[in-house]
Image 1: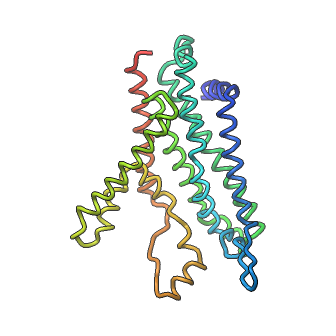
Image 2 (image 1 turned 90 degrees about the vertical axis):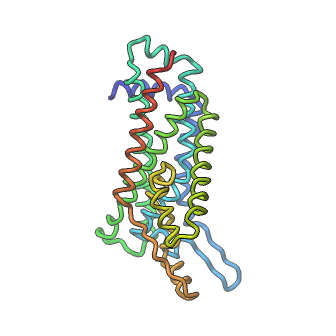
Image 3 (image 1 turned 180 degrees about the vertical axis):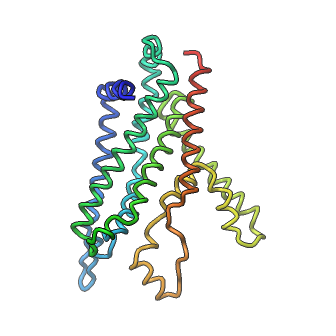
Length: 281
């Protein structure tokens, strides 16, 4: 494992584009802290985001992992560009000539995916912990350590998403086309979602029936890992109650969703290996 990771880090070391994208990604993750500085002070109206509870423990784990997951496309570009460079610079062929098996090549890329996801998770944990200790109204140890499952869900989400990018990178060999293929898949899922709503429009519990089917699709499963946190915020619930609305949505991280994303991760990695074994390099 260490040997394979060493090879990957060596390649990354001499890839300027990947290094720039990685720095941008982690820089943007650090910029989550800037949300605390957002203030509106117009006459009697004073609004400070840090004071409405978004950095309170344990809510901050949910909020920050959700926001951070929106930035994952930057690291996706790193993943797919690394695959594209393997074909462009013939390093894949050279690695195989030097004795690296195709299985080891795929494993080296998967290990890199896991490392990227793990470092991202640790980074978000540290940023969130610092922000929470600075702005949270609740600093008891039991409260701080509750809801940490969102960090695990964030890690699983990144591994699944990057594995998908790895598969498409190997499939089409070009980073731009790989990202484009993922965008097409995303739109296909949404078109299918619209079709299901149309098919079940005359049925009761339409939304539940559609969700029961869509939960098995990769993008939908990844999205379900960390649901939007905004309607969970106390201030939003108070406003909703005043206008007679109530939110019954579940924000929990479901084990079944983790299992679905894990299965898709395995499928993408297995298909990547099958493609590589059948392809004449």
